[in-house]
Image (cartoon, rainbow, N blue to C red):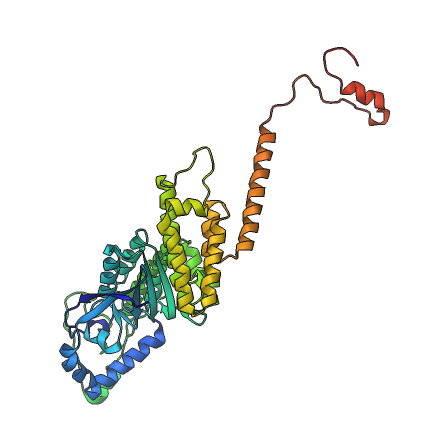
Amino acid sequence: MSPKKSQNDFITPDLNLSEFCKGQMWPIHPPAFEEMYRRLCLESISGGLTKFAAELPEKSTEKDLYSLYGDTAVITIAGPLMKRESLALWFFGGTSYAYIQAAVKAALADDEVAALALRVDSPGGVVNGLEETVDLIFEARGQKPIVAYADGMMASAAYELGSAASEIVAGATAMVGSIGVLMVHEDWSVYNQKTGIDVTYLTAGKYKALGNPDEPLSDLARETFQAELDYLYTIFVETVARNRDVEVAAVLSDMADGRIFIGQQAADAGLVDHVGNFAMAYTRAANLVAGGKLNYLLQQGSLTMEKSKETQITLDLLKSEAPELVRQIEDEAIAVGHETGHAAGIIAERERVLEILGAEADPVQTLVAISDGTPADAAFKAFYEAEKAKRATGLAEMAAAAPEPAGTEEPQNNNPATETPENKRQSWRPASGPAL
């Protein structure tokens, strides 16, 4: 399937390097930042950065916002994250928050897009622009399902972006987490002394030149910067807790200590929902679309059925009332098969989905079984056990609500030792009426 491309014209990247100004805070995986900073310094000294900047206007200003596979828009988020299209972003091959926002908005406005898939391979990036982008994704998932896929690395700021999606799928070896914020301070004072350089800062305001690189880091500067880092870290943690629908304490204890989690470790910690490949992420997005459409039809009463009966999903019902949904489920099975390259998988997946739909089970259970890849026979067993438990509960409730039989008395026998068959018969006779 050849993807549809959606393009947006971006202006030529500016030459701004403010992302690397002293005091900038980075929610990023530390080794990635160290490599970027080292490379930037070396290229600045050698003249490579200047040469790159001179050639920048000649580079293409067109950029694909997303690729449309079926009705799922795939947005690629790779490399370090920065606020806008800048010299540093192009130099390091990163992604801007401005681009991500434009891509999400375009996908939401595109009637051909039913779901979004964020394909993320990023160590994180700068703070500026992050929260606005995260909030946009979080709000967008209420309009169209969004699945994030950790395609190698989804760390720090990149993880916060991914956490705003409806679900997260991570590759078995994907690196996820590294939740935290860092800042670098360089002390050039000793070097200045050796070279005979004497730098003086003239300021108005107690904190104006705090933490400058030409003097050792003072206690006041350290306390001030640490307070800023802690504040941003708190926002980071609270946002992840909101996005993942967990308590802040759970994020602090299990997710946000700066560690990297790999594949299943990330799932065990609650950072991701599933471990698999991109085909799974694509399928999860399609399943969420199917579930959303079905729930909408049920809520709107578009599925016509007797109100006195419990709503049940059947294949015939879906074919008559929501044929587009049936086609989508079948297309999804085909897409999964094409992605994995197994023809047998296409047939097996289609048969599994159609069998489950034909079981006439509870709607929620049906959707869960389809989404989780539950085999048809296991799904039937689960449906049977659920119905059996439901009926048992109903019988128990009826028995509890039934009135006591009128005109009878509990048997009285204070001395079990003297109980005889005749006594038993006498004690269970009606309280009034002729003796037997």
